Image 1 (tube, rainbow, N blue to C red):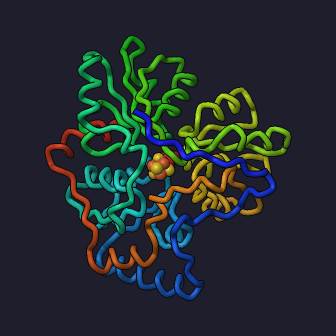
Image 2: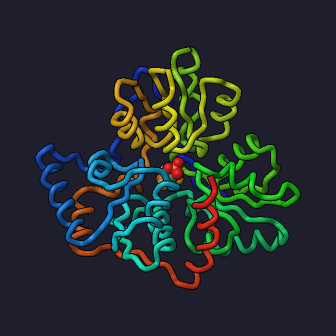
Length: 337
Ligand code: 13P
Ligand code: SF4
């Protein structure tokens, strides 16, 4: 099943942005940010809470967090933290994963509506029906899935370790991969394995089109950093081009730090630009598309984070039976790569 595509407008290369877009997140003054940040840090201490934030969060939320990272890093932090409360500044499936990994902890999300179009592209019932058609297959799910879907799978993976997870499965086994078709197609290329792929997509990454990268190919000094959730057309163009790296958000930061190149064009949600600009000073980063903004990620704001810590909202829970089943596949994900 495929979710609706956002029809992109072609934008000239000279309008690329080097600062992250905010979606509908309100612009706060410097004084408001300073005061909310101080309040949040005090509340986190009083509640014995750790604040985890995904790389796509608005800058001021990244800056107040204890840890900022990709899905894999956040899952590992959630499993390892000694804090009694985790406040998850990301989307709902990520907070569910934290709940499953740390069932004894309180997990809060500042806005319960922070969903994910990719996770919504398959339900547990749809997966059960697909599995019934392929009873001998090993089932691998990208971490962008609900807990109920994770309870039905053998392995979870993130963009940070998907290749290693597929390579850990014996070569003679049939594999069902879900829900992202572009990540699945990329995995087929890099592993040489044939996968059965669910036709889901992320509306933000699918909206990054080949026309967005055409202007780049002329500039020999630029490196292109592409998230594997991006559309197959741009990946095909990118593939075989030595100036293109297909990377998770965390690996984009690691790669940019180590690269001798000075200029990078980034094909993923624009929130990552804040981390890149902050942690790799002196190099130039531009978003390939200023439309690549995840409105779900941008639902988390400093005032909502403050309210969450002050009022203990919103509690994220996972049915214990589902959590127990999902745990094995998530443990395998955290252990690999
Ligand atoms: P990363 O795991 O690479 O951070 O990606 C998560 C995500 O939601 C991408 O859209
Ligand atoms: Fe989901 Fe796409 Fe947003 Fe990532 S960017 S959280 S995959 S909707």
